Image 1 (cartoon, rainbow over the protein chains, first blue to last red):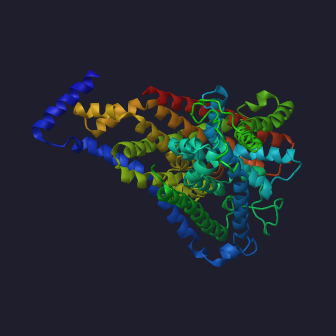
Image 2: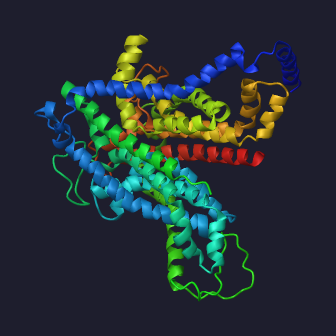
Image 3: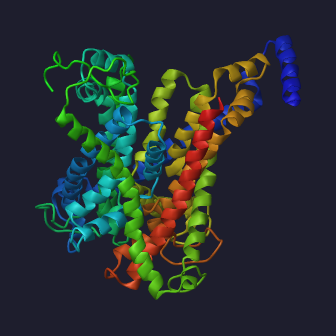
Amino acid sequence: MSSIASTTAREVTRSLATGRNKDRTPVSLIFLIGLWFSLFFGVLVLVALIVDTAIAGAPRFDMELLTNYTSIVRPETAGFRAGILGSLWLMVFTALMAVPLGIAAALYLEEFADSTTRWNRFVEVNLQNLAAVPAIVYGLLAVAIMALMGFSNAGTVLGGALALALLILPVIIITTREAVRAVPRDIRQGSLALGATVWQTTWRQTLPSAIPGIATGTILGLSRAIGEAAPLVIVGLAGSVLFDPTGVMSPITALPMQIYSLTSQSREELRQAASAAIIVLLAMVLGLNALAIFIRNKFQRSW
Amino acid sequence: MSNNATTGAAGPSSGTGLPAGVDLRAKSRPGERVITVVLRLSAYASIAITFGIVAALIQPVIEFFGDVPVGDFFAMEGKFAVLPLVTATLMVTVIALLVAVPLGLGAALYLSEYASKRARKILKPTVELLAGVPSVVYGFFALTFVTPTLLQEILDIGVGFTNALAAGLVLGVMIIPTIASLAEDAFSAVPHSMRQGSYAMGANRMQTSLRVVFPAALSGVAAAVVLGMSRAVGETMIVALAAGALKNFSLDPREGMQTMTGFMAQTAGGENPVGSIEYNNLFAVGMLLFVITLVLNLFSISFVRRFRQVY
């Protein structure tokens, strides 16, 4: 430590004598440029990705891309109707399964559970771990659950949605807990003082105040689910389907699945179609992300 | 439920922090009992999922090791050998970390030490946007841009059509936000008095960042790196598309090689009937992957706990 003290002391003397700003030394400037570079490197990659893909897919931005099914006979008009519809169905059923369960779990942990007990600390570590379990492992779990329920084919709306719901459940629980924790104690205490029970306080005061935060977390979770392909590969979703989904047991495909299966195709037209589909997928995912950020910024309250 | 006036005293249980005080017995509310139990069960669902994962994996794994000796699984070569997959995973992960650790920490340092409050509000979501890009899109990008255009044409490196280098580089970009976000939390948790002490000694912002804030946040930084590593090990679509589908026990990143997750994606997408040895092999590799990431995650969690307790 003495070396730091002596160098800095020397520098103080120098900067006092010369009156120069210490943040403007060449080394500091190079360091700052390095930080700027690391901040914008990712954005540069993202821009390169979008521009490159958009150029590759440019000839295919037409309505047929959204309304046609994938065709091997006429690849130049191949569309992603089945994938887009499949992704939307998956989203709806994923949300139906994961959101109520996630919010209920978060409310229990935050409002009812005694966070000092060893058991609840175990629940907590477990949640943090689940949030970082590889997505592909949730695919294996969904296959096993479907087999337990007696379905040999997991590549259906139900199987896919199950895998995605398991995947985003920890995300929803963690973000909901943060939103609930941000609601000030005074509001709860006011409600309790008027004679409301813990549940009445939670349902009528805490939950409504936390809704913007919960919405942000839910949308982020769903945007992750819509772009995920790994668990869907494991549950055995088809790479190509030529009909619309009709029910929970209907075999489907999803947009990321279609992109995955098209990448192995060598035909130029199919690659083009895949590039265009990527732009559609990015528009959906980044649109959801932007919506989440908008909600966070617009409705974020400071009490 | 509706009539608050006749409630008497609410008997808040634990968790809300109100002392019970005088015990005016609350009206019994069977409905709320039910709600509490439902909420409690939902919370325990997360435990059930963990045990579900282990249970789901264990039966096929036992079947697998009934047919294949353990030595054939933990072997360098052979149909069921897992070690080439592990080394390939390690190779891709190391390349990814070489990209993501400096860039992620740099971004985190800028956000916590240099950016104004307003700039941070815009810049942080921008960095987080990278995590929102689906991994299959990154995989496609690695295969159609990074390998042919960047590595082969511009940098003129003799890489194969699929190679570990492109997969690792793109994977690194993907985990930048994971590392940046956790590291920024750690940097921001360093108390201001330490920075002020450093400035008072005449240090500038670079010296303060590197010699005071960074060492003070070291366990948080370690947590960020380990979590990034766990993410890289478990990521599937990028490596399935860009790293290749051939078991390759090689230390040359220019060659194509198959990772654990890449193997799983390929096996699941192929024509292997449920219950066959090949199918059970998928679960054995999945089990190994789960155990590896579990250990890494627990390390990361314990590091986070340590940096929270220091100050």
